Image (tube, rainbow over all chains, first blue to last red; front, side, top):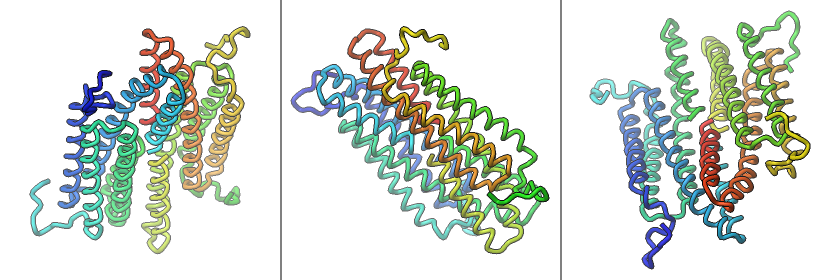
Length: 103
Length: 103
Length: 103
Length: 103
């Protein structure tokens, strides 16, 4: 996690769960396609809304997972190193949490 | 559900905005693909979360639009016709609103 | 606000559950006082946040109940009477739903 | 929990904004009382819902402020000290964020 190579493809350190996030996002993409089909076929509106709620919950769950990893790695690392970067990271995380709570 | 016949293709009455909804849902599908690319490239977590919040807001907006149309057409029609169907439609709408508020 | 006279005290029609709503709102007021005590005593922040979440859910639940009653009575009555008032009521309900979903 | 001694009155470190939080919570308590009056007087349902949305936003704002302080102080201190306590604090914060996002 900390031995970033010169290629730097994994600079943000959540590679260990990357496949899991990609799989969940592909499913969410599939839900977006399913919604288009439902609208195109003019399926019952309440059924479409149920799907939208499920998709919103799946997205929220991805966001909460990414945020946890961000705090546990990026923010914690910045705090351990100290200096102004820690403040920046804490402010960024705070803003991201507020956006999630309010969206 | 999938075998919509040619005879009744517009049974739920929101055809007049169908293209608009389809366009918005295609954009949301594109956002889901964009998120996969961001995770795959391990872009900065906070940027990914910002995208998730934008996508959640877009989904919410679609849901609120569909719900409005549902109430203004299906529920209102059922109320005008009267009978037990009106109660069913009101209960369904109430449950859909609660799911949206809580998701 | 509406210069309620003794003659027409129940114009908005939710009197039959009024005591229930008042009881729930008194409990919510008590939660707000409990939060002040927790902050004043500098209790553990996570415990305070747990209380805030419980209070938010209680408020949401009151809002959803009031909205249901509003739709089932005011909006439905306006729809049955027809005319421009029905449109006004539907638009108002739609805006109230959007505020709840986004708050 | 309630028998905080005089010796350690400020153990959770947010005393510097305590007055601000108390003031905001008193205003929220006042909103809860205002809602009771509105329901008791059977004011227009949409106006009551508008007040509920305002109160929910005020509560959310208090929660986000407390969470920020908790992360910037309790969690950061635990991370600096290291050891298992840091993990515990991170998990607690993660759970609190999830409750806020989902409520």
